[in-house]
Length: 220
Image (tube, rainbow, N blue to C red):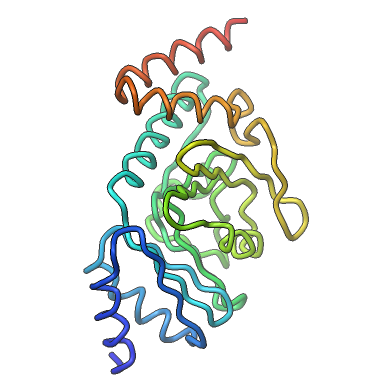
């Protein structure tokens, strides 16, 4: 490990919860070295874009929302009989493109059958996730959108603590949509509504209400 990498790890260790650290002129090998050391810093997210490295520290609230969204998506999958494979905060990267990112969580739906049983995703041969989720409470994630676009991620869900927006890939950028491409039964407003309900009534109550809504919508 280089002395420079050790210095960066010392900085990361002191990074406040939710804070963002930006480093520039980082080569790919340095990025790979840092990735290999991040097991000592659970919850931190790294993104890399042609020499620019961004590291974001974890927030407990941030993790709660991510986990709740995972539970909602699992319910949709079961209630609508749509295949689902989750890959959490997997690092998606391409040395050829000099880009890499770690979503807060991610899902394979349309491409689920292609990655069943795979614990390591190689974007040279495997598809990117169909949906990535970004929770923006203290640090915006819009700077990651060009990375996801280059990697070919079709859909992004972004929750800022108050509202949710869904985006679809359109050329080399993203545009706002109302209904999810992966789960057309779900709107951005739905996701916001039940996230907000979970804050007031708790996750179990919100999940039950969400399931009732899905069943009513599916039968109408």
